[in-house]
Length: 427
Image (cartoon, rainbow, N blue to C red):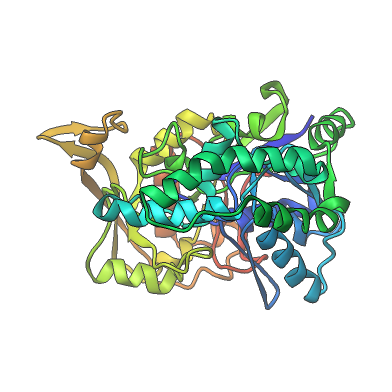
């Protein structure tokens, strides 16, 4: 039962798409198990760049079946647009499977997301405004719309009515917005039914049968560990569980079927949106990391906040996910620095702290304690093995591995599909 989980070990944007794509040729199924179109993966194939938001990265690998699991929230218009864009570029999308239990992002979820975030003012979370949070809230409040509801107009109408009973009161009386008509929403959602029908399946059954047949299944998380609703920097988090445990609930497989858990780490750290970020840089180094690394959100288009590598966060990700391996990405971005700071601990109220504090207040006041490592100036983008790297680059990788608590089994030395050094096989 070769089931692997691949997830972000920082705040997202670590390069999960590339890692998934590299495994795609050896993987039978790639499964998105949480999140929605608030995630963004960039995959470079030859001279072609693909920006994926909702679709699993495995959709670019011939022979691989991409799956959108029950834990994902789906905006039908975004999904169909993304499929159309790939089809126009010659990508076969016919093998996609969508769980009938996945929840639908409705037009009113998007409206609620935008007006509530605007209403928060200085206290805003920094959401993408795509309706993700309100959709998960509806799911927990048991007034959500699932993909399967598109095929029963009576049930769909009842559920939309139930959801809008409260939401229209809030929109009109609190936010001074116009009420949303039930019939209009139902009509819009029903319009997607026939278009999505070829893809809808009992994905829990499909995936468990595949594992019983010794197929290779890769579970792909969106966002990152520090954005997990339970284990992240709450409240500046996403609305789902991108950590490894989320793969089980978000895809319907038991934990005993997971064989490896791979964490994706950037050779430095980035974050999009509000919230604490101990190693964030506001100087020329931060601007250089942003420029060289092309640090702009795939989904949001916002500049990413940039900082040095944080080993405290990496150790935390190892612990809460049970990581067996790391994939270190964007090592090439650090070429040219004479010395590279690495955060090895925090200082909080005069105390040295080497593990992530559970208190939000403490983490907010954490100051990084840096260890300086020697840099390198040689171009590493053509390196094919670990020994091809400059000695200082090798030492940097080994230091990060020791600090992070799990072996680094692959290293990204450029954005291209082939610009990766594989140290240990993930399969």
